[in-house]
Each structure stands twice: as structure tokens, then as C-alpha cells.
Length: 109
Image: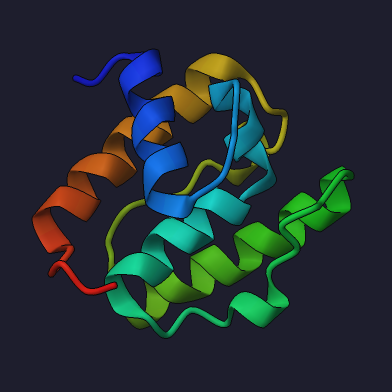
């Protein structure tokens, strides 16, 4: 398991962003970007990276759910929990997504 600090460093490095808390992943944008770094075909134009409201977060997670469905990734996304931006829920999902990334990322830019 990666620590909160390790995960934040990884996300910031990978996505060239500057998150200070795991809870910030609750907007869904970073998760979409991570999946895009693997597959390169996530419709990022539909992801609102500067989302501030829960309805915008939900729209971002809808994009993420569509990616999971299209790629046949059999992992339920606990959207209702993640959009509440609670540390523990986002930490657990971020740990899973990092493992998934390590198993599937091919080194592309």
C-alpha cells in the first residue's frame, strides 16, 4: 500500500498538477487523467478539471464510468462516496487506481 504522501507525489508528478490533499481527487478529474495516461482515448474535453460543485464532479465520474465500461474494467466506482471528497474513500480508490496504472501503463507520453 502506498502512503498518502507517496500517492500525492505520484499524482502530481504524473499529471503535472499541484494537489495538496488526496481529497482533491474527489472531483474525478485526476482519475480521468490517470486513465487517459494509460489509454490515451479518454474524452478529456468532457472533463471539467476546475470543477467546484458536486454536479460537476458527477459529470466527471460519468466519463470515468464510461471508460471503465468501454475497457471492461470490472471495478465498481463508489461515486457517491468519492464526490463527498472524504480522505479515506479517495485514498482507497487512489491506491487501487495506482496499482491498476502500474499494471497497465505502457510508458507512453
